[in-house]
Length: 312
Image (cartoon, rainbow, N blue to C red; front, side, top):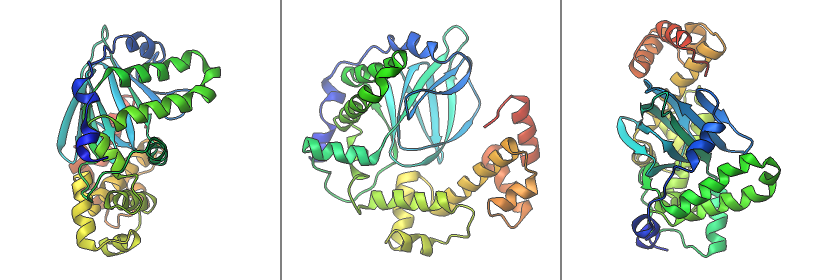
């Protein structure tokens, strides 16, 4: 299946679904502010009753759908906004800064996110006789698509499983498979297909990200990372930035700073200890990098987060 075929037709000709049936359902299973794990593996529900400042997160490959309200995400300075008429797909692990831009106590922001499995997508493509896209370009690892009725209906049935937990083990695999099938027939199919192709450049970038997540605190150079994924250093640098919007070293720094923030907030580590644990040799350099990413030096940032009730 070529890119043109994959871009056809759900996203162009199918009527946009009305998301309102999901509003009371998601509201019922999000009794308070924040993110909620559910009985369905990989499914999270989110609720916010007011616009927010920046929320720093690491998105794994996932499908995300706003049920009510509006959200803006930024990846390496590139901004995307989506609402109940659209959906977000990420195909690799990405550091994201999110902001809820439309929410109130009367009409809270409601959203769901569902983890995607590249292995299951590859199996579905094989079973359905779908050919992977031609070429070896990478493209961004995140994008927004237009919500269609078939996709929204499958998502509605997914969330409704929360009302009958006994059905989850039997029906979840079928509904998950349908959601992936609908995504493979959306205008986001190209991104998802590419990461399923064995030894493709996009899959090697995903492998490089996995290596970096496992070894973020080590002094991992570009040459060593490139060798680990069987690419040249120059090709890795170019393709990595194409997918994530960051160079490998910028990505590693981002991982380190986010983990340090978690250590200080959740485990109450002091600044010097957190900096050392994530691989910084210079506390002053750590403080400078931290302030550039989060807007405040470490100690002040953690105090503010605790006052606001953040727990991470």
